[in-house]
Image 1: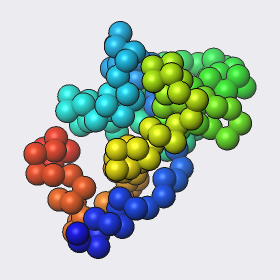
Image 2 (image 1 turned 180 degrees about the vertical axis):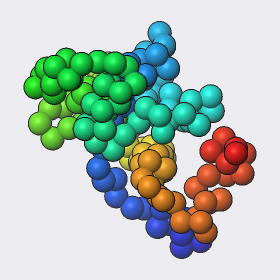
Image 3 (image 1 turned 120 degrees about the vertical axis):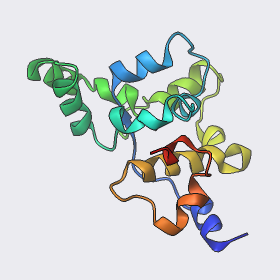
Image 4 (image 1 turned 60 degrees about the vertical axis):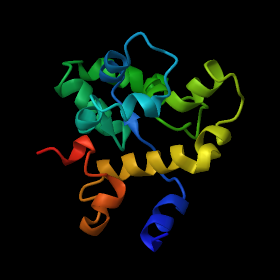
Length: 158
């Protein structure tokens, strides 16, 4: 295996990804049984993730105000209640909320998310890192682009 591939798959997950609650629920629709990563990596959704996924709560709050027209007071009330923690991909430090923890508890009926992230040859952890890289400014080195995003990946569309 190429060293680049081993480095990408074996690296630790870090940080978190926050989804706009309004956009995510619209995209997910009524299907509550699909994994959050399956929803986000759906070929019809993937090209649009930059519009509603963010690396910080502050950016989600700004998106809710600018795009959805929510007032600063409504966003501040949600901040105090920790509402956005429910739409983070991973569990937050203060609460065991998040899209994946909720999916694991409610759909898979398990207590721990470890099997979700590290099972199946660590594919979900790899996908999380891949998505996080995609959200970072200049996140993927040009020589790793084909390794991470195969040529048929919709992110190659211009």
